Image 1 (cartoon, rainbow, N blue to C red):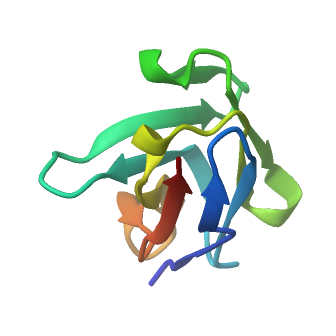
Image 2: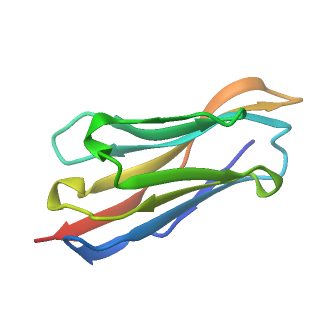
Length: 120
């Protein structure tokens, strides 16, 4: 069973930065897409950014150039660098990956979530 382990959330003031990291376990044969979603209280989970194997990237409109997603394929890791954070960025951020393994084929996996809180 593939596991996604997240780190890097926390509390920061508006205008500050945080760096989220997500590592997939070693039994991932091929990682097709990795990305980050977020869910604020009372709202639906929404895409923040994703990166493919090419690599190509896709960002939500609300990112507005403030976040950068990158991946280290050798380490099965995806990084989300978040700058110029706003209070409305406060949410639980979830790592997501579509991964192929010999036993399960291609499946979607989610991390446990990490809290990001931006104070005004």
